[in-house]
Length: 155
Length: 155
Length: 83
Length: 83
Image (cartoon, rainbow over all chains, first blue to last red; front, top):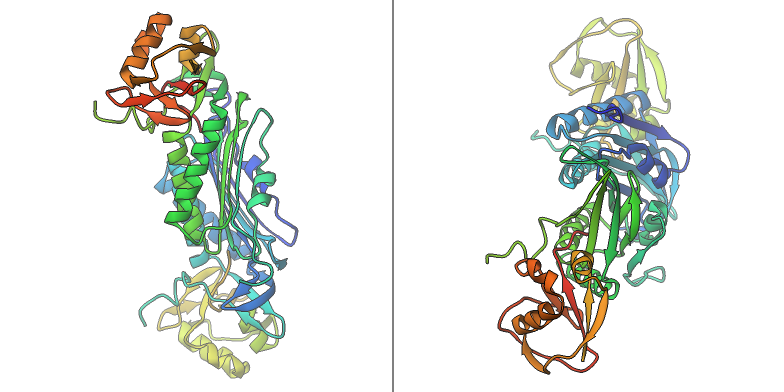
């Protein structure tokens, strides 16, 4: 440990505001890290041939934050070299091409941050209580992640 | 193909200027994509216990651009769903915590862009003629990527 | 008295986002579901898809016995779709 | 007459970044290396580490015959370290 060593930090935010990729990458930057990996989820303009107008997200916010915190804990157990982890998720309306989620992880070398980002987004889709309504031109549909842990269980 | 469908594009840039994560993520954004994955390389403050002051990059620029173009071509062969690919590499001095390379890939679903970003950075380190001098307080060292393809060959 | 929270499709079907409900202190999660469906019958279609979150921890519908304190938060969690 | 380009450690050892060199039109890559080391003897230490790029395509040092046109670019490529 030298004097520039910082504590590893988790940055978790659910917000109605637009997300900033620059902001998130600055949050996880660390002088002892050579690698930052990010995943950005954006609204697509189509689903099964239907035109998507926008997505609308809602969350059970305090529990969602707690579940994201658990993911951060798991990530640090699996890849102890990891430094900072940021998970920002937008709520409310998210128009086509705008960002709904950003996950960023820093580590001294790249393999840990690359693996951790994949793990974070897979697990977020399986365990974090957030819902997405897909708005088409004349109807809508509540989406269900194929990763959702209980709809995946043997009945 | 609907009217909003764009051609897949490669964005390749070697520059002395600071790199912008926002700029690169905007370049690869596409209405038909729900996923953008990024890798960011930053200057670390230490190597084997030695304090690193900054890195200094140089390139055989036209060939480096051509080799990056080949990587883009390979990525599209391996993952045809991929939309846009951006590879920005900084040259000259890069101080601690600043960005030396950004790779970004967009795709309709996340698995392709996550895999492609890993492949791009691994292959860039193996094949693209760019060199890095690591400046310590009183000396320096020319680095060699362990991925460099010919130093990896059986002699 | 527990606070029941509804989200996404369960909020649409219930017609409310939260309400206070009087339930036995000791109750299985399946019995709790039946109590809630008695009040909000349109939720019945979600039977095979939902789980609870009790005090913000997931609980599957089944024979698990819940011990509820007054004021506890019980959320109806339809299949998630964040990310 | 080809244009030889030096980069990174090879530029430091050669003391120049580029120069025009007269070499046979048909020559193996190993013979070309020997010609260059005759002019820039400090490069000899790089023998087991470098490759060429001839017209911006990699060529390993060996018995491969090169057919060089006047003005062709031949670069000395020490181990790379981008990224």
